[in-house]
Length: 230
Image (tube, rainbow, N blue to C red; front, side, top):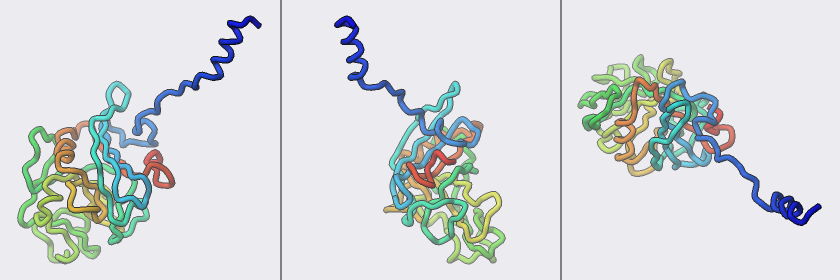
């Protein structure tokens, strides 16, 4: 073999193998809800109370990142949504719709999502015995105890702006959990919601387009609750 050929053969072994960059996270997921917008909320593992929220657009058949922000999860970490128990302060993993937005403050300019203003008599019922379980009510119904409901206006920071996460929402299972939202950060970990800085929450509301059918996918980087499972 000629010296030049030997050099080429040796170089082919010494050069690092080329590997294509990984596809965007939504492209690696089993499902994204069928729309062209998606929010991903990812924690390192189920014991984590922090992670990252990213919002994505699908254009010309490809997913592109539209924005990202640090996120907080439940004080009890994350757990599989289908087996979650109420009162555990865990954030349910899975893929969920986003029925509507709400807030104590007016909707950010450019918000296209249905935005429900919080009033003095706005409550979210979490009473398992109530016919209004896991529903917004105005006023609080007699069968929903005040101790088993959130008086929304009292959460001036967290509910300045929020999106309802459709966990256990359309056909509520009693005892699984109620009132799971994407909202503004409070002082620390949440009671099961996903939270982001106020500026990021405003950006998400301006970005979200109901015609694009956005969903939120909550999960971990790996393991049984890996986001790619959903």
